[in-house]
Length: 223
View 1 (cartoon, rainbow, N blue to C red):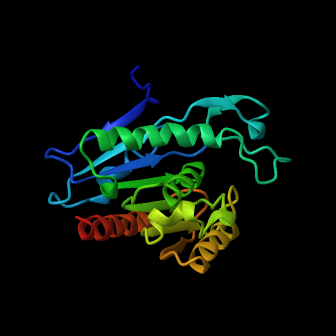
View 2 (cartoon, rainbow, N blue to C red):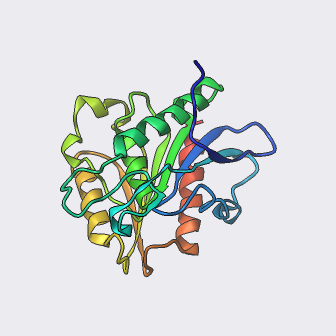
């Protein structure tokens, strides 16, 4: 039986890619959300990257009064640490990672990126993935599973490069959530680069430049 993958937007370089970036959007957006950012990265020709932007499934969202929207999980007010739908979405993204591996890309050349909900997913998946991945780009987001850090389950990616960025005026996911997440990661021995910017729940050109610098550093070093 053939696997059924969630729909994606895919950007391939003119030459064979040396790495794959799977980039996950935030609540209510779709796979096209960060597509315009790629030209802004101004990546060198000698680092041809393949970008995969999945569309999250639609589900009822508590914050929207139960209306359906694209999301990786729901975040009900009374859920505590529960994020309904998260594990189902994890399996969908793991399937995409495996597809890239099956198509010839080594797992250590696959990087997970995400904004907001997508960043929660990128951290949750990559930190506990059973094979070494290239890195984690976590934008305006937080860590959902601090209690599992340092477990045997996380052994393969104990030294994975992590870049976290957050807006100082973020009213959707306050920067305190991001800061406490990066502190938990650092206390557990992870190497985290942290940058904050005078902005809300968004991205800015300075952040894009930092992302470009980091991608080149991480993916060139791991070739």
